[in-house]
Image (cartoon, rainbow, N blue to C red; front, side, top):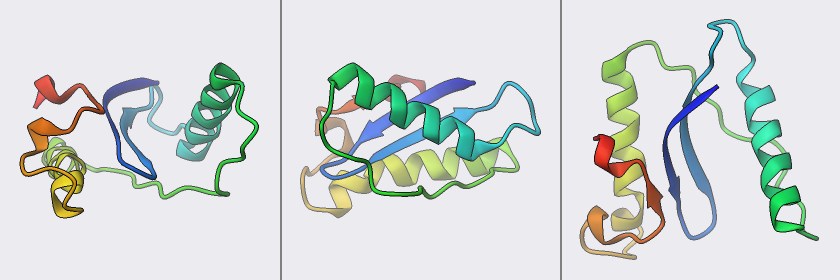
Length: 94
């Protein structure tokens, strides 16, 4: 599993990931990521059940989703420019 870009909003996380195998279940990746984060933080809280997964069909679609993810804090009124958001990793890839 390769995670190209990551973005944390005020109350949720966006990940743009690519499975190493085309038929890999995306839900398995999100469950593993949730487990890793909780263990790493030694969290006492629980994640909200489920997640919103989307299977992208093309590089163009991935770029559109990345633009959406990147602009989330701007739409929420948290910053004026996406580049002002302090919780971003991989933005230089776009």
